[in-house]
Length: 293
Image 1: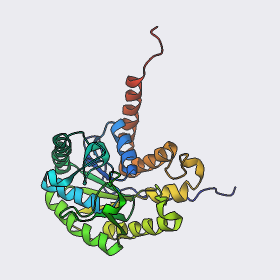
Image 2: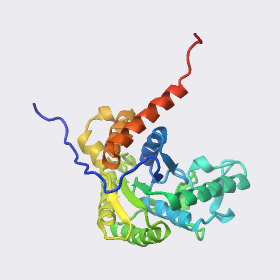
Image 3: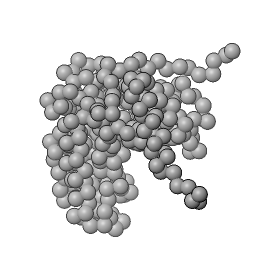
Image 4: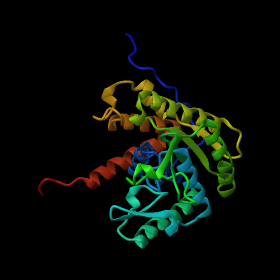
């Protein structure tokens, strides 16, 4: 029989994830997909405490802020379309009042700081190497989200491999000082960013893959690894039936398959079985009968 897929080898990770392990997930919406499944299966997960972050600079800035437990202030906010937004957070943190926005952002930072200090695994997923610099506002630099503010307020450019590596190397060293037991698991999101066309997306993803290769193989004091979510979806599951109707985002089935491979690479069979049991229990608990018998 002619094979219809290209299996991607995912070797077991040197660390083992258990239900007692703390996990912090940061990055693109693919990190959300894995984080949601970990939560469903009963793991202790701090999932995207800044909301969805797409580029390596924003993820790095978020991590540095978590390590320092550094709050944002009024200078980090902008008012637009009737809401206050943080330049460092996703729109789900936006609120009608300035104080509400500060409160929800800073409480999330403080909570995630404690979780990161106790975590055994940090999952980092990069989505794009394109960044947006805020013009004419000191101290902000690359924004995590444009919040539908006029494009004239930003300068857009693509980060280079060397720039990403130079930004992350000292950060990983500081993470080791902050939490010496932390394992960092990098991945590149298989979600395609098509604003610059197929070729532009490939250039962006290639930049991320080259940068992550250097970061996951560099001899840091901190343990760094790579999980091939991008390759599994784009090579092994190379079929549009594994994509949503927009033909850009992986379908729930594809996310389930990648999560299963993630579990096989990071967990013992006993932990996987416990995760399955937890998922079944949650599904049963959430079931609403159509009528009472």
